[in-house]
Image (cartoon, rainbow, N blue to C red; front, side):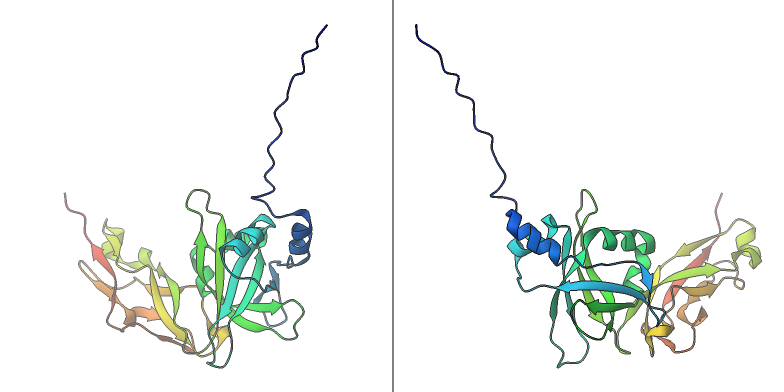
Length: 232
């Protein structure tokens, strides 16, 4: 009697597209402990890990290990750019918590294994279009000449008789560029008082209440909002 052998198809593995186990362990060992915590200088603190490899393949290996590639750059001309890796989950929580204000938030950055910290601002945060996952994030070193885009907050609308009678505020700008003499002076938002002004009144940069140590980078006559009366 003859026996029939059933050939089962071999299971396909994704070893070619995923990092090898040894490489995964090495990448996880580099995982920085990035936590949303306050440092002694009152700045939110980020701990990142240094990385040596650059390029798209190295970035894919980092993302597979739960890390995000980033670059620390800017500042004085003699300071070199640094390649770092950031924890994906911790950075995602930070972005969701701060939203539009994340790019005007000064962080105290600590590179693992190195003494000292430096003040940086997130820049070029790249998100995946379909899932909003973080693909990369760079960090620009803070300096007094750095232009920060700070969100505008319009207040005192209830004190304006025109706005109380049915008019609305048409916003031309949602953020304004400023320069800060000190990192501690960077505001979370700039307030614009709408208490004065009637129909067609235009609010300019001169109406912004600037905190001490903050100056406008945009022209002072730049239009911010317009009081518009509804037509029947």
